[in-house]
Image (cartoon, rainbow, N blue to C red; front, side):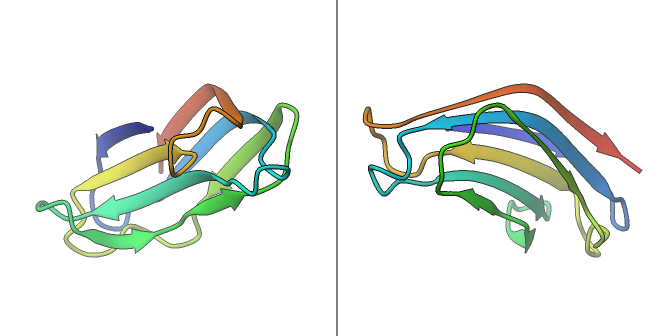
Length: 102
């Protein structure tokens, strides 16, 4: 799992851009999660914008542009990339990850 946090203020819009490739998800009934979370000062989730991939993809450009601004009391934006439970049966790669705030 990759887990990164960035400072974020209420009413900011965060855009996440990355390339994703997955292998053997469908055949093994596994998922790849791109979790984009707005957090308060204590790490409580204020808004969860998770995208789940369950099919195999070959280097797809994914752009997640929020239409919801960060909620009141937001202090952090967190990006988590995970396949859920650890498994050697499937693979996921990411490249060129960009986080931008408006």
